[in-house]
Length: 90
Image 1 (cartoon, one colour):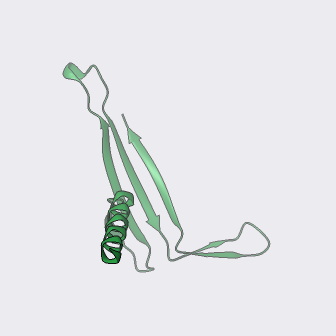
Image 2: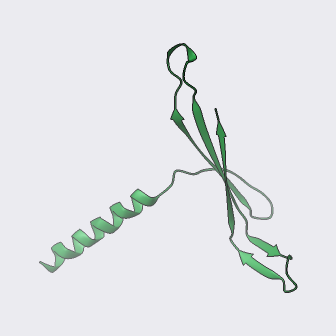
């Protein structure tokens, strides 16, 4: 019974991580260790004869090794921050 419970917990954790995973495609990595990813999706396709508009969303994610915030008097350093940008084309 204990083995069955452990197996069910393992299967639940394995499937739950797959649900929350994102399909980011790594584009490049620069010499400073910053990584650039992209993910795109088609929200809707145009109908017949072009009466409806197509919507395409392209997400970009930039992950930096280190980022420094100099806006305040005390300098803050952030490790592995990322920026996500959405571009939507109609």
